[in-house]
Amino acid sequence: MTDNGWRTRDGSLADYFFGGVKGQMNCACKVDNSCYSGLNCNCNADDHVIREDEGFSTYKDDLPVTVFLNGDTGMTLQRIMLSLH
Image (cartoon, rainbow, N blue to C red; front, side, top):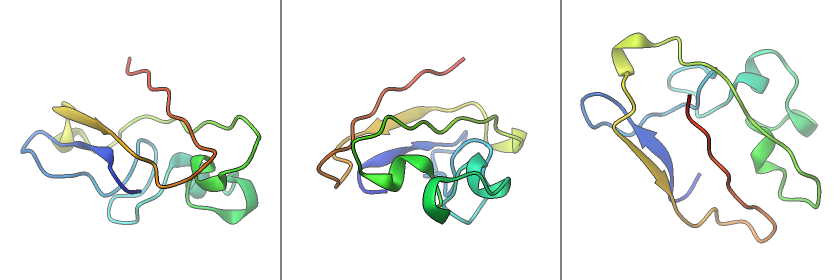
């Protein structure tokens, strides 16, 4: 993760993505062992395949999301599309 992430209720930069484990910089797919090639998140693959990461926040004390940071991914083939519901 470079310039991407989200801020919690108190303005802290979250150290996980929705569905992931707090403090482990991972996504829901890591928790259920479904991430591509053992990565922490599918979006880290940086290949020509469209992959997605999705999940729900189970850490209610971190909600609501106050800011979503969407900048340079640091990868040549990666693009970001975001949808919050």
